[in-house]
Image (cartoon, rainbow, N blue to C red; front, side, top):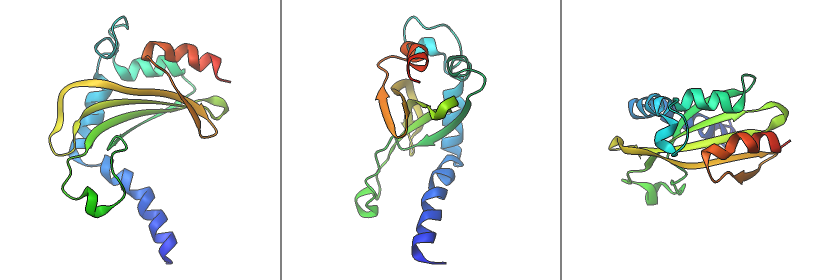
Length: 147
């Protein structure tokens, strides 16, 4: 197998391997059960899992994954020994090729799920062009507005 092929397989497998760690598995489980009312004042007392399903609609496929919040540099020496932050993404694939990503900060990979979880970002996009949605409560309207 050539080097480029091995690298592409490794890059695909790395997020999956990270997601299978006990810390990542717990973070996903906890994130799905967070009440959205804790993430944003004025939202109902629904779990994030249920709220996301209602917001994106029943035809959208939602995938949950744990990651480093985009903090790794890609340089193994620079990243060695760092305790990366731990985020959970709810990624919804909507009809028409649109994608919604909701990111929740959960703690760190070394310390695990710690402190109160916080909404880190909400975005919606299509064709690799994303726009930030300032509040979780604004997502349903943006879903209707972005064709």
